[in-house]
Every structure is written in structure tokens, then in C-alpha cells.
Image (cartoon, rainbow, N blue to C red):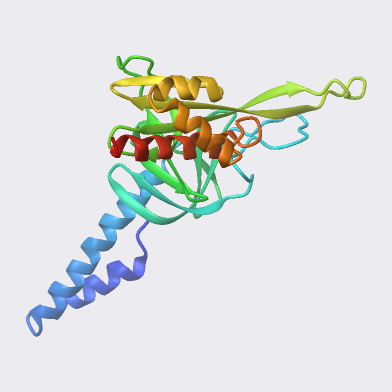
Length: 241
């Protein structure tokens, strides 16, 4: 249950006694109290999830998106937008974590998350459906959205045992796996390399090859930049047809 400061109750009670003398003051305070209770209730829902289960294995690196520390972000949860909350994304368990005012790491319920924004990236939960090629359910980055283009990035940290671990003391590390999905013409296409990207876009292949070479875009060097720039270029070429 949400705890309400005792001073708020006392203030409302005292001012209610003066209602006969100044009803406008009473209305103002009651309105403030109502707004406070509504906000407190929303906060209680936000921090009502389970606490994060911490890993006990000795690790060489961390499992989080960009940084293991909490960062200020923007969150829409159950239709309510919180413009400044402390978040981090666990890529190993695919969980969005929020830091509560009591310094608890709380796992946000996936079905209640409308979106989250950290490091300038828009993250949302995708539910698997009957659309052809639909990727597995989970949290995805929306890299780009156009009239007929939706480019998604899926990040996963997979755990492996370090073969150089000392005897009787295994150490583990995370290896980041990245996958891209392009939704176009009612179908999802999995992007794994330059060839599959050009196949998914289907048209303007000659122009796109020239663009890739001129821009020095390489999938193995920076897949995210390469896929994003090529999709945007394809959209420009298609609009000029």
C-alpha cells in the first residue's frame, strides 16, 4: 500500500475545518490531495514488480545494454509516461530494470511496457503474431520506421565459460549477438548480412551497391549503421520512382 505523508492528512483535516470561512481554499487543497494520491498510486504500480535476481557466477563482463549502471531514461508504463526514471536493460534475461526510490532493482512487467528510451534508443516489447516471418517475442530496438519500413534490432547477451579459468574456479563472460529484422510489404525479413539485406529490399540493387561502396559501409564492421543507412537510401530511391 502506498504510504501518504502524515502532514498531508493533517493539512487537509485542518483546512477542512475552515471550509465555512473559505471554501475556495478547501477546494484547492482537496484537489492537490487528489492529484497527489493519483500520482502516488501510479508510482506504486511502477515499483510493484519482482526484484531482479542477481547472477552469482564470477563474470568477466556485464550483461547490460551499453552500461551496467542505471541511466536516466523515459518510460511509458500502463499508458503513463514517466519522463525521468532510472533504467537499465538486462540483455541476458531480456528484462528492463527500474531503480526504485528505496534502491531496489525492480523488473518491469513486459506486457505493461509501452516503450522505454535510453541512450537515444526506442525500446518496445514485440509480441509474436501470425505475420509472415515475425521474430520471437521480446524487447527490440526500433531503429527506423517509415511509410513501409520498420527496422528492428534484437540484442542478446549469451553466457559462455572462459576456457582459461583456473582449476576449480570457472569464470564466465557474455558475448553480444545482434540480429536485424525488416518489416516491409506485410512480411518480416531476417537480416544477417549484406546479401540478405539487398534481397529483402528487392529493388534498386545496383544503386544500393554503389551507395554501399561509396559510403564505405561494411556489415562486419558496423552492422547497425550499414543496415540503417541502406534502408533509408532504399526509401529515398523508391520515392523517386
